[in-house]
Length: 143
Length: 96
Image 1 (cartoon, each protein chain N blue to C red):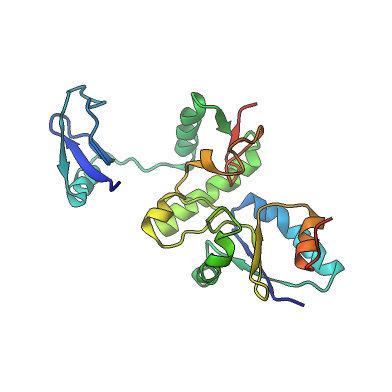
Image 2 (tube, helix red, strand yellow; image 1 turned 90 degrees about the vertical axis):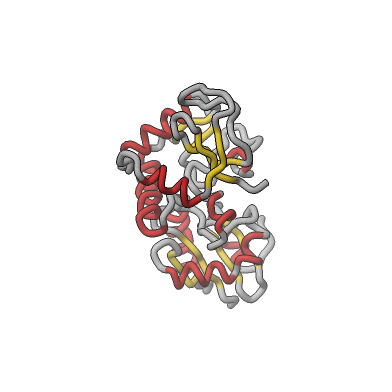
């Protein structure tokens, strides 16, 4: 299942996935996506407004992300601040918001699994664990 | 004594929690850990990657920290754990 890039021909939304959305989530036009190259996608994405996140912005983003989910941001504020510090250090030094509690392998597909928030629902520290948490502990199951 | 390594991350809360236990273990026994921080030192990161076959099989298929490696027996254990478990592992004894 190789992921590719797609562009809405009406509003220029960019989608990265194995298939394009049937309905553009922004302009609501049906069957609007055409495949483009990674280089084209980079140009479209790189030319927009500055979207750099400060740690506080990222914190707000993950709070919104967890709002409708069975998990929440860890109430241990000290732990959260340590993790956010590491996540942003990693973005500065290594290009992505890599989990501070794992190490990238230098294999592209494998390392994308470490970008926070990762798919921690499959972690043995979370799946089936009543008070489970992601490996690093940034997200914990609501109890 | 076996060659023991500890891989840790500067901003990893679990590593911070384990470090005093490792130091206590070193004070109470003849176990010694070579300690390698892996997010701010690429040589250390490469060293951890060189143990990937050993570590990944014991740590959810990934390179996670904190991880403790016994280089002589090619064994690894990762994550937060109780002092007694770490001690038993480091000394090659069955956990109580």
